[in-house]
Image (cartoon, rainbow, N blue to C red; front, side, top):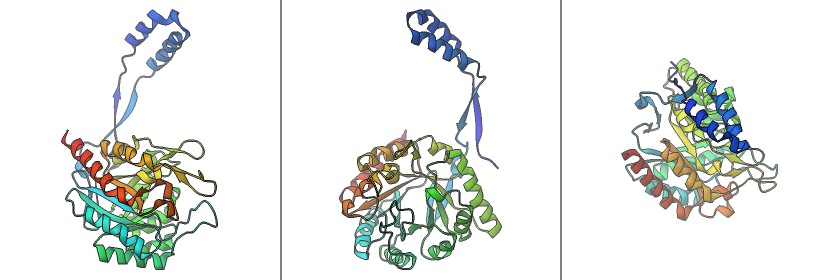
Length: 334
């Protein structure tokens, strides 16, 4: 059943037109506004997308966590790409301390292969075998569920042996074979909205997951992730309407604050970004009622093999998350 519903509003433009006519002779702008409002008044109604009435139905299970309405905030965080055990453990130690909070559930995230690097000579990571081994050790040592992104259907089952959550990259959100393979593992799936996709079009991705799980007799556990939309070349912007729109599909929504500030190709053969905008955007997402936040962090972002300009330095990360949790608590109390 489609959980979306619409409500029509008649717009009271008559009084606006009359008021503008009183001043339209004064300037060209006034006359243009009269024309614009008359055209607007010819539109019988504007369809407004409204949240489902029963928001408690918005939930997904990630391992032992429940994500969604009335649940602790889910935090998906870690380095962009795996480097070595020492770096992974240093980051996981900070995340494990945050996971002691009752209002937060933490998942450690890192990639074993950055298959979509700008340059062919850029480092990609340790590969699936060594990378999953590192993720497994982090999960065991720090008692954290782990996640990684997959790029090929044949990677899904192997990654699911270690990960409680499988991530589908934004560029691959429409790849049916990949989405189906991830869903067929029975693990939760986090699909990043393509930078080229409208949020309402993510309903077809959700349908793919639900259909696959139905065929396999498993529960569909799916999250959708907002991570920015192309705004010309080399820039991304966030349309915060995508959060309630995708929640309107009956699934929890993640906000990826790190990749939302990317500037693709901004450093020539590498992706640039502006980490100073990460927290302001995350605050906006929290105020919009997002169910989960995604960040990348590193002890020394400038030395990270990938996405350094977008990362929150590890020594600033805990305080950042605590401010966002305080904002969430205030928002939920209103």
